[in-house]
Length: 283
Image 1 (cartoon, helix red, strand yellow):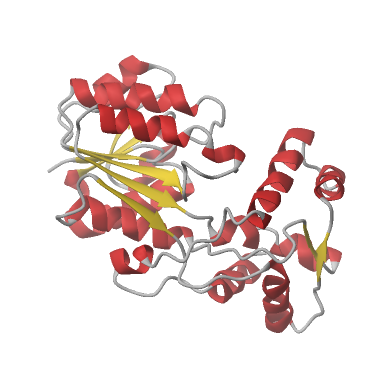
Image 2 (cartoon, helix red, strand yellow):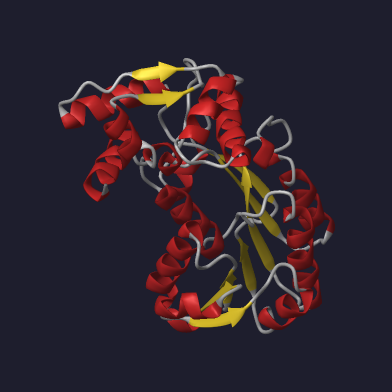
């Protein structure tokens, strides 16, 4: 069996490749990347696969049995990019597509959710057996702000008291590997979220607890938070995007009580406190 992983040089894709290699051996794993030279250190076969160049996808999927389709990071281009991958899968007789979507993709107000329903439909319409992994937020999306919170003496956001049921990126990678290697996941859609939920006030309190410093959560309006991000060096587009994430969280888009993630990986999901500790060690 040969499994190919798109986005293999990204943070999630790299985890998936490494975990697959450990379980089924390097010869059974192919890393697909737009820049193959960046993926050479993965220790598996690397093939050129550019979402914007369908011919590279056609060649990259030759001899592949299963495709781990890690969603592209290029918001606004993903629907067509993913369609190229699905079409190449049909041409090459792929037996199973596993796709990383987003939590409640068909209902979410998140800007980054808009293209996922179209890809989910394309995959289903292809008649290739599929598994859709609707991933909630990554812990790391928020713990990446720990260094800034330490420097500023506060954790800023505009999510109010929204509950966020994120999980560690590695948890989602373990779920992907389980679905790729175990039986019984064909033609299923999973809503994947952390076992527990927290507010940004609770996240700031955890940072305070681990550092012994007072790091309060400061809740701003969406406009003020976006302005603060621009002042911190973000582009206006990225600042608006990140502030919009918090606003979507306030609407409940980052909270899900499903326990399907821990069921798939056979263990509890990683607590946010563990990811905070990792962020503090690496700052």
